[in-house]
Length: 310
Image 1: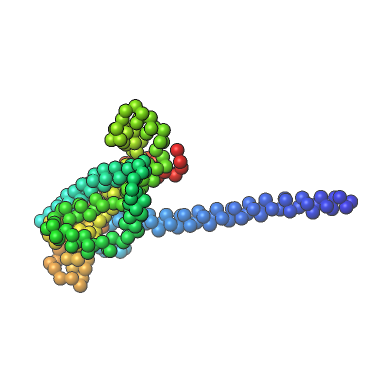
Image 2 (image 1 turned 135 degrees about the horizontal axis):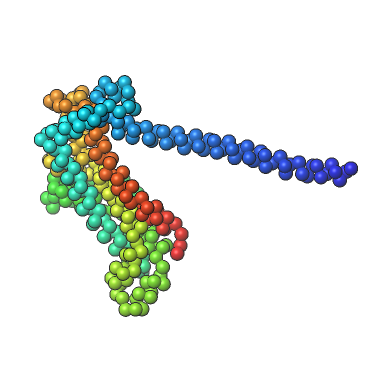
């Protein structure tokens, strides 16, 4: 009899604990899904509104914000943007392409070369360069604006494309990202085998390291493109001519000069209202979204490539 009571005392907690654990796990799962769906709705609803806004007028935007208007209104919104300031929108789009892709190429080349040297070579000042790279990563961009402005003004590059391209090509995050990849995911045995076979250091980089670095190249190119495409502060400080603006700065000028969007500002009564502003926002967002969808597979591989050794 005593043994039976002891068995009940021993087995009862073991049978109750899994049931309680299941209830706790179930409650946590519900809370987790509610939080995830809440964040999804918070992020998706503004994007849906941005997609639908060019198809309606101002009154329809207030009455039916998440409904589709008409294709005729989409065409009209585009025509208003295209006619603004004699087609300035097309100049801003071309400038944005130049300001995004030229620094991207320079950034990828410099970052890969510097990161490979830092990861595979041992030389005096290596640790100091790494510390300077980390320090440059955490410095706010606003802290470098005045030194950059004075430096570029000294060489008479203010209000030129190079005043945006050269500072944008300085991308310490890309150097550190590529350094982590080369230091953790590049097998030293392959490098040594290539050197034994007679390859120079340039040949080892071009024939061994570079083909294996495709995931990190895609990741680096994507981050550089997004940063340069959405760059507002640097072109706003360095450029004074409207024809040299990129899309973010140009759209800021468009909004500030249109009384329908900025009633406190002066200016002519242009046919630029909220639907036109939403379409301008789409012009900025769509290239980044297309690039992300195209490089999605490489981006995932690039993010996971440096997560483990070997």
